[in-house]
Image 1 (cartoon, rainbow, N blue to C red):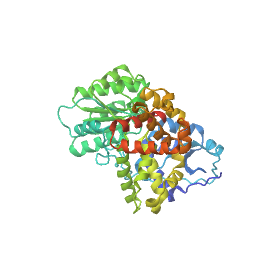
Image 2 (cartoon, rainbow, N blue to C red):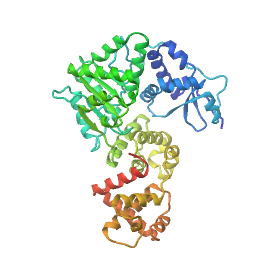
Image 3 (tube, rainbow, N blue to C red):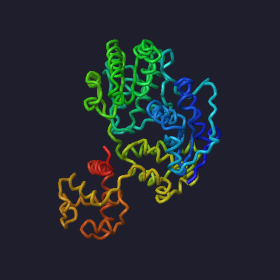
Image 4 (cartoon, rainbow, N blue to C red):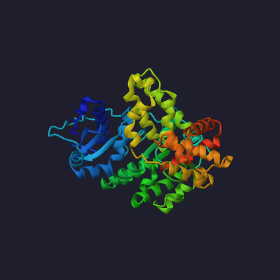
Length: 475
């Protein structure tokens, strides 16, 4: 299917890319930006997705290795719609049905004067605002049982209270609030003590800045920039694994800061003991302070996030109607593996529905969210559900399809029927047949019974949450 080029300077997406480009040109320098990014163009594909298209595969690979994470940060910071941006070379884009004509629109990048609310770090540059996103504050962080301890620790560190642990490491699955928490901590720490020096870096930015400092013979200035910080925050520290010179520098920086009583906060996708790819000394340092796990959000927390986010987005989009509660519940039940995916689905729904949001049906919701629902979706069968439920409850699969009515079997059977209704597209009669030839009214009763119980039975709600995540291949 043919695609149309975006007139970047005139479209919302083009304006977002323009803001990101200004920051990148400032941070990378004119020569580096001109060599690798200046010829990239923003395109929309036949699938409606946004692409950053590079003229060559070499340019694509350089951007992916050296700048893609930073582009993602800048894109997210400047795009209120939360749209995804994908990276392709010109050849890949055309091979997949895209078309790039010879009159690609170029983005004019004016001299950087003010720039976005994210500022670079480097020798001689101000560091407090590096990569911080204004929307990530404590006020916008929705708390629940899975993250309340981590939130309390972050608030304590941000208040500069005495008796703190050092370092603090927040760990948890991708997309469950670690970056939000570190940003919020940095903002609050700067507000509480304007005279203190706060440095926030992603691990990838730490790596690229360190390499650039070595290349430009400014390593001493780079080290001083970090070691003079009163609070150093590094996001996704696991990314540094295997980069030996960078690990060495981080070990020395960490030791120097801790020796001077400065505060250090990290985030990772696993607890320090599981970061086997990083240097043993660094792993030991990370394990020596306070390790705070952030568990996947439970259903109540996901609903809370959706309610707050939908209210904010409706105001931003001038949409008077609110998302119906049953639609929010559908989203909370469907997107369990990542809060970012959950928010992305909500963004799409509100923008696509517009003024018709309040009257949106479940069928229309599923239609609007087709790419989100299909993306990365694992096909789950009733057989999968029966096997998982039987294993979880210590039963045999045959028990779930048998005539046994003991509570120890009946409740797991009802839970499995509820999961089959939620996670498959099988009809109620079909589900009943697969549970020992039962009538569809039996399935309806089971589904209603589980719906009523999970609101008051915390253990059952947790069982369903764990089973659904396991079936979808989540953590």
